[in-house]
Image (tube, rainbow, N blue to C red; front, side):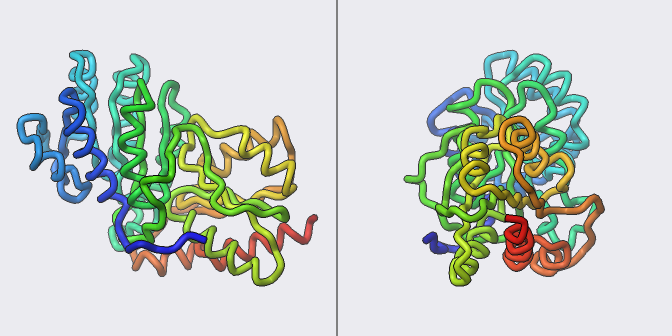
Length: 316
């Protein structure tokens, strides 16, 4: 059973991973777009000021600059709020980065509904859908701060082309270890079970684990998979879970249209059709509020996952 080491925002893992990469690879450079400290790029800036470039509030321009630096042999990182790094810059990422398959790494910060009081305009709930549809793009959605550090490092050491790394603002349970191997494209079984499978990503992996352990007390044996890579997604672990447990619940802090749930369903419909229930944002915008209140209102807490599991179990 996983236990919480500390409460830590996943954005700190991104900053730590970027700094670690800077220490190892001199070709790593970073581009700031006015919110350097908010996305923890200040870790890199303070360690390597000569390799950090502040471009101001110019997210679209930063992608073009990053593409140029990549063509010159650098490995550039851009990071800003996910609504800007994935949505505002989609055209530039598509044409300048993905079309040329350049090693530009993009940090999508403050993702999900748990940004809280910033409200709908700053809650990235569509970024996974947009990024995963782009050819050549790798999409990473780690579960806690420690894994975000590993994912950031892996975006360079395991991915030759562009990569999008999704992370959040608020402190969340940090429950994994750096000893837990991170392999791009390979999901992780965090809990075994034979009755039903929860496939979760990002912050909702912890909620899924809490739901699973509480359901165990009710004699419902739940498998929990951490799907930290949305693209390329691990088809084998999904198919195996479907065939062995017969039921799937997906959980994501994202629109259920186009995100993890859709990606899982695309695999199941081809190779192992089973009943699926999706937990996430149901085709609407968020609002301002405290993170926990919003997660509860929009049905993304462990209690909501438990309800979905019980409803689906009735079909078995």
